[in-house]
Length: 598
View 1: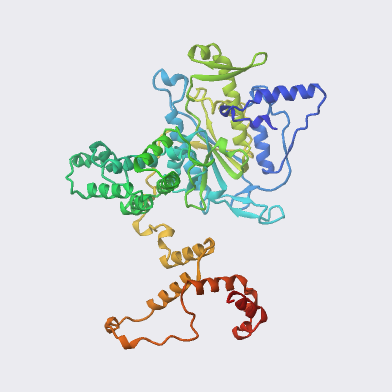
View 2: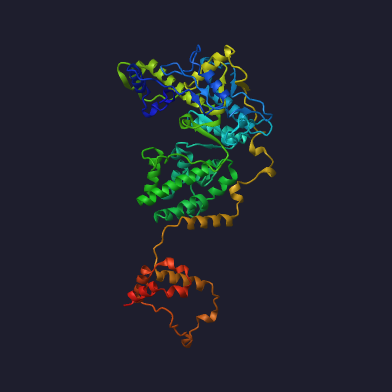
């Protein structure tokens, strides 16, 4: 294995045990075979990353026992980056940010997180907006388009880009910046479906449906997007009369819930409330709507399988939110991808392990990590030690900080090695520190290269980041002319096309149906009757109008039905390919009917 990619210490993974085992095997004569050929990235990208990871540098990125001792070489000359004119482009872009002077003693040693988050969010949005621009956009040599180097050039698109973040709130900030810039984006396997705002909204609404008489529950439900009552008007809804439309809606939904008609109830929450229409027309982001649908599907599955009453459904949703119970399936709490096919993928560095993309942007990680009551450190003699409480943590604070930094170094290594063609990296040009530890190793390494002028322009391109917030109104989609607005593509599809597609899929995936001759005959007669015009005089009684029974018709009755079923079981239907008259003269057919009619 590669210890440089050991990034799951928070799940109990113990890279220190691996190191002990590796050293012991080498002591006993085992050979260590490093993998030094990289078939993922372009040669310039590999040279730039090797420069950042240089273990012989005065301030290497890896500071612990895990080192970058065997630099990799390119295994193919593909994925090269160029501009529209075909000129090579540096594989690394540094967002160079010089923060304003500190304000007060708290900012003297560290740059505030909010300054870093805002500055690099602006840089991220601007870079990706320019990356897909018709004139300023970049091209990549894709080996999937041609086997010959340089012959597979194509424009970069949003789906070629990963934005790697440290945590959930970094992902939210990155998505907000991209949304303001009009860059399509989606979350890749984002955890926390039942910790989302939409889960809390549905919890509040279902709680009000279960008890519509409780005023506090009603007000919480009215404040959600499902009811859409503005906050400034919420106070007017405290004492609604029993006949108010919103109260009547809650009581109607309660009746559905008490009858456990959950498909109808959830359909009403999505469609009867107008939520679907409001989200599609008023929001540029379809993430909330996807989450609402996903959560209701999960609740419907659980409620149907467990036969839950409505209060039990509310309790189950609350347990999911509190993580007291996990939804079924390994991805039960993972948010689905939105319907955007060509979109920038936002994911955590942990999720990116094993993946790759032509363009990778690193964002976030500027906040201090939360400190828990239980921590783990590793001692060379005593092995793994568990620290419980503040006093125990304080005694090993230095070692704990060192191990946290080493894991951050491994996280950065994983992030730096996901790119095929280009990396976008935050560069804080300052001797002041940052609140978190994740960004520190990269900051220290880049500052050293900057001071010693070891950032060659053919490998590293710098983009200055303004210290002041730049106005975004010109790029905001809402500022575009109304005439340029287009509704989502799904709303422009012909409903008949969707219905035909649904009918085709339903017929294609229909299960085997066990039926009877009587049922098929009745269905055929009913269908034929529906096609006949109905006249008023048909309902008059005419005793003499009964038609004579055709002697060739099969009489009814239980015994005739059993006889027919036995004949059907005995017949070989492969012989029906012949004409009917020829088929009924076959000896096998005569024998089958003779046998069942004896």
